[in-house]
Length: 414
Length: 219
Image (cartoon, rainbow over all chains, first blue to last red; front, side):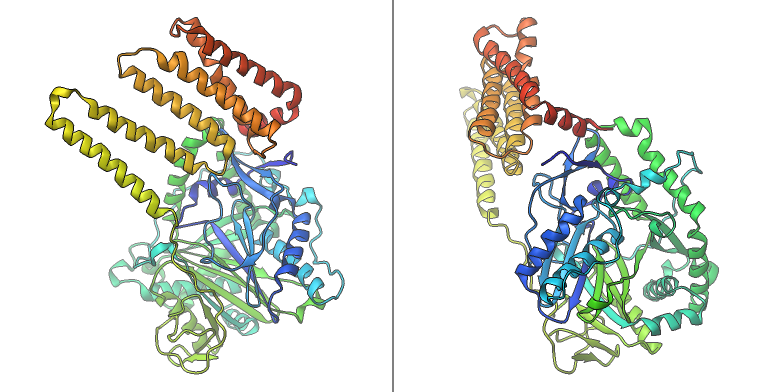
């Protein structure tokens, strides 16, 4: 039945053009249980979950002017993990689903192409999937996660809903940030290093500096980058951390699609120095300043206005792809690294005893940190293509120095 | 669980060295958390490389031989252009292998264009517009129809591909009216088939036609 189709939401419009083997725009959410995964029951749970998230049934198609999502009846096939994390999902001449569910040992993986949804949307899908899976394996009857949304609400384009049509301030040209360089793995392999820590200890450290957890972790990341910067680069360009913001926290929406916005935290060493106290103060204050509803609404208006411009709309997709790819590469130069805090993952009380933790990470051609917490565990997932792990090393050593124990997992098995 | 004394962290898995500082780990390993992934090796890589090599060799050798016997004419140009045409056609076919209806349409367009170029550079005898274009698009339309409606092969883009082929299939009408085409029968058959295809779509697949055009042309 192919009558259902959706235009791409504003954020999604860049991803098909931006994706490549080097930067696949795929993110992975994992859930670690205590028991090994049963493939058949996971398959059943996946099919049942798909029925509640119509947008995940979509395949990506090309129109003359824009890409669009078309509902398909392709059945998802669950299999054991067999490729590098966050490998390419969308292939131009191959109609396939834009997400994959795999498993390895006691871990369920959900990989999603960013065109479909953002972290919050994917997390809702995974939570539902895990709840259905555990209902089947533990014979505890159906357990609902707290995600109250109708099918059409889930498929809603919230960018379009909140676009006011006002012409906001012009988008400022973003300053080039310090660029991390180094040797990369061949085959565009993504290196994953995940650290699990006690969330209470991390919060306590953050509160010592009167900072939020996001600000504290971003500051440790900034400090780690600065410590690895060559002396001649210090003070030349700022260390900029890109922080995606879940707009659902500011504007009511239960959409299972993209609804986020990128903010930037710029740290200028020449102005503020290298002391950690200064870093935290500056990062915390910038984040507070960025996270104001009026500023975010203005960002929605600015980006949506570009998409709705008459000239933009009638440019053929072939040309748009090229222009969007260039625009993406240019804007990527405005950030040194990204820190995405997905937040607290809530699961029903009856299921908590079966779940160890959740993990998040995303493909990148720089370095990216994704954090999420479940129960008393905070997971910090680093991804990068660089062979050197010095920045990650400094980051985790900074935590252990402060008495926060770290348990590490990595796909580097030398 | 293994431990790194330099970083003071516990490390899961069987790695011998710390992923952060590469210092040797101490302690007992646990099960690996990630599968071992082999480097991508495309099965068909060898065959494709061999094809490219042999066709390149054919083109280069023919140019060399022709240079030695220039009095036989510039036949090596035909060989080189023939090889390039074969590459283009094969490349499109392989790329679009999984989307059959798009494959048929694109190949029909490519073959027509290449034949027109070939005809133009060989003293224009008109065979490309008299025979190739009408026959290619007639076959494409018939092929799409038979595969979808009679053999019931599932093709995602049947409607849009038929529209494209039918529109191109009306080009012989323009060519005939402007006097470029001199042989009527193939063009007449092609234009008739195109018109019939469009009418069939409007009668039997109207809803899907409208939906497809809305999706493809939405701004």
